[in-house]
Image 1 (cartoon, one colour):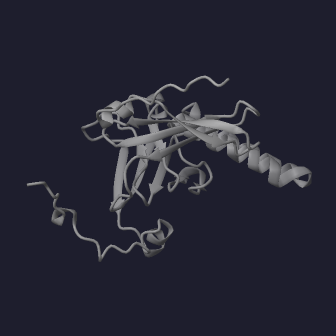
Image 2 (image 1 turned 120 degrees about the horizontal axis):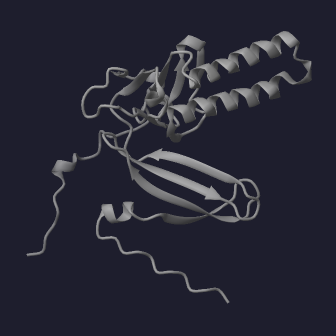
Image 3 (image 1 turned 45 degrees about the horizontal axis):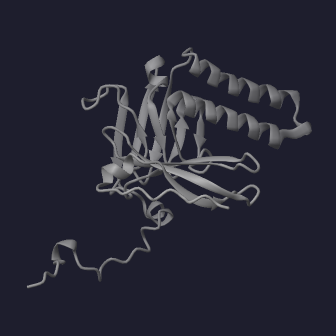
Length: 233
C-alpha cells in the first residue's frame, strides 16, 4: 500500500515559497524511469532571483543540474569583464545563463552559450569546467589519428588553465549575455568594483531573433495601467 503523500505547504507570500524546496515528478532523460526534480528559488544579492533545479535518478544514477533566471529578458545585453589576479577573484560567484558566451582573450578562447549550459558556480568552478570540457572534447575529436605535435599543442593549451588557477597567469574573463541575465559577484557591492567592468549594449536584430523577441506581437495588448479591477457594489 502506498503511503499518503504529505499535504502541500501553504504559502502566504512569495518569501514563504522561496524558503521551500519544491518537488516535481519527471522522467529520467537517461533511462526513462520516474524521477523527481528539486527546485528552489534563490536570491543573488544585488542581482535577482534565480531558480536552481536538480535531479538524481534512483534507477540509473543519472544527475542533472540547471540554473534559470527568475526574471525576464533585460532591455539591453550585458558584457561582464573581470581581471583574475588573486584568490578572491577565483572565489567570486558566477551565474552563467544559457544565452551567455564566454571569452578569455589572452588564450584566444571563445566558448558559445550551449557549451557549458547554465550554471551557478565560482570563477574557479567555471574555469575548471571549461578545462574539463575542452579536455574531453579534444580526446574525442583527435582520437588515435592525432600526431604528437597535436597532442602537445592541446596539452600546452590546457596547462595554461592550471597557470590561471594557480594565479601564475593573469587573464580577463568575459561573459557576454544578450539577455542580460548573467552575473559576476562584485567584491565591493554596492560600491563600484575596479576589477569588474559592466557594459550594456543594444542587441542586434539577429540577437533579438535568437531570443525570440522579433516574433513577439504586443501592439494589440492594453497597457497594464489601463486595466481596472471590477468591484461589487
